[in-house]
Image (cartoon, rainbow, N blue to C red):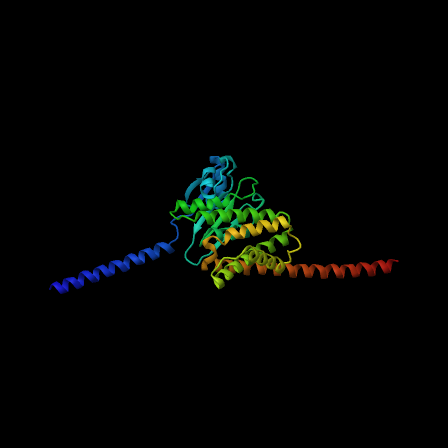
Length: 304
């Protein structure tokens, strides 16, 4: 009888352990109960309502909070006045395998950062499986929007690594500063080159089990810029900023993340498709212009 009771107790404990394991696994993959909207602290109540409409969250049940200058200091190590915090975000935590998607709901008011730059920096920060909407009621650079995303994760009990958040912000500022000196096509190619650099650094770490030297990083950056026809365009100062950025990047856990590699691959495919379409469009435009020039020459000869 005692042996029988002992077996029942062991079995019950095993079932409990399995159930708890299942709950933990479920918690890791669970979506948030509600979308989370983080408003910039510089907004009035009326402006928050306007921003909710821009984000498409005005008729949804959401978790709301505000990101302040102190949050910026907490996450990134430097502060600003609350009045400067205008960019706002809505974040939905998607299920496992959902990846990161970014939509700029007010493209005319986010004057500096592109959705690809947000995505690339989000990967660096360790953000996974999230749908991010960005909006601003008036023109701003959009550089503080990622801080709102970090706050959204914290409000839902998820904490990101501080060094990865800091490097992600530096990445956002560095790439956007460089992109301002490029035309639209070149800026898209820079986004793709940044992805390539991250992939090559991760591959080198996996092969050698060591971090890249400064010389390795410089070569990887140069190779990526060559691949995307940017090597003769960037200045020495811009190159040095990229080298400094990726020296810090490879010191974070992002360098070893299989999830980051997967997401970077998806973004690279997307950027490659856009670039190919742009190239094909450019070829067609040149052909049309060539035919137009021939026709104009014929007509000029006829009139003469």
